[in-house]
Image (cartoon, helix red, strand yellow):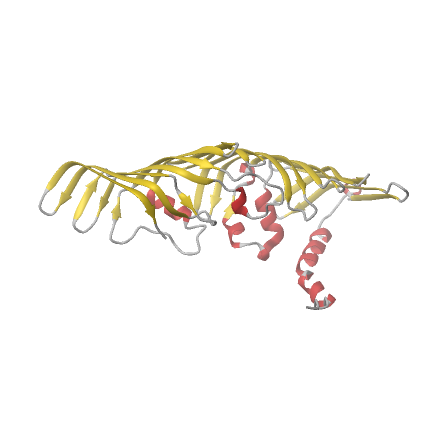
Length: 363
């Protein structure tokens, strides 16, 4: 089919909001003589083309943000585009962000290093204004509680720019993060990924009296994952609902106690990393064996009340489809323990039930 011609008027109108916002933001600045932005370009055309672009903005203020000493230095030489420095700092409160990167066109190799202690998400939301996405509008924090982020890596590409090799390292720590109406006291993340091998050192959440910790690692196709959580049920459901299109809730026929403790371990298998992979499933591990334990303060229905019930599930040799959804298991065992059972006519102290099955298949 023949591609439709581009309508320049429609294209300009589409980006008019952004260009007008940038124009008005610039014209609202009141620069002193020594604060005027500088942009310099040098171009050399011969057998080895050479281009450099240098920019400096001593001061730039918008919304509640006060950017200082913004610098840009880009160079193209010998088929390599290099960002020697893209950086800025802020005052009130002090913070900084920087990026260095290089892309070699012939070998299609990219290397980068990014570090930040500044309020990137609130800055982006302010710049986008009404164009900010709903999830972006939910996430905020005070400027003095900006996250500390470090991310570096190298990626090489095939001719169609599918990945050939991937190596990533990252760390983040965020305090007093606000998601909707909920406060995350602390969020931590540390990981590395190298052509299928990975180590999620820790993904940790602390919000109020609630804690959640997840870790996982895999090497040469095999790995393990572990989760530990001690949370208030209603507070956690409210936080989860900030990210869901439809609200998640406890079925009305059940009444749960305030808290739950979740612990689990899983054996993982990871797909062999192959150049040219583009689907997310090819980078995602499969769960082979799974053990989960869920402890509740209480579980009540109209007919009975279970005090301190514990449900444990063990699945071996899980089978998953292409979408990573489980479709079967070689064996399964469900164990149920409870300290006390109250009914309308009786009270039982202590109960244990264990059910096992083999060759489980389900849809």
